[in-house]
Amino acid sequence: MPISEALIRKLRELALSGDRRAMDLQRRILEEAGAAQAAEFDPKEKKQRILNALRKMGVNVIDDGGGND
Image 1 (cartoon, rainbow, N blue to C red):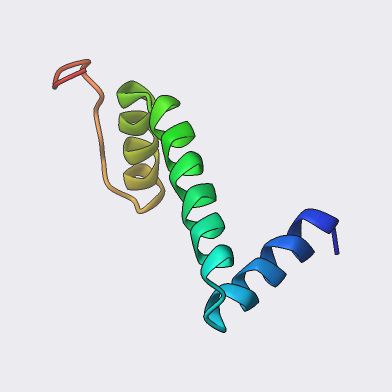
Image 2 (image 1 turned 180 degrees about the vertical axis):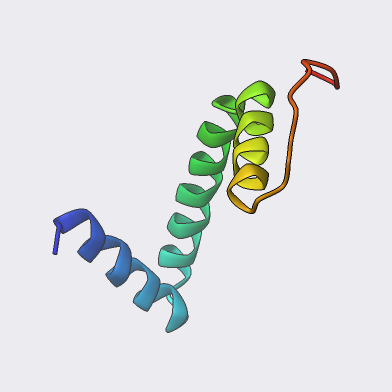
């Protein structure tokens, strides 16, 4: 198991046991990770992923370039 995964598991264990510092640190990590993901958000990429998922389900999708890009 990678050290990063072991550390996250231990942090989670401590937070679940009521360790206040562990809870605060876990919250900070999640907030920062969320901010990083939000910064990487690309609406066109999300649209393409949705269209691809629909196609995999057998839905006939035509991407005419319309919509709110």
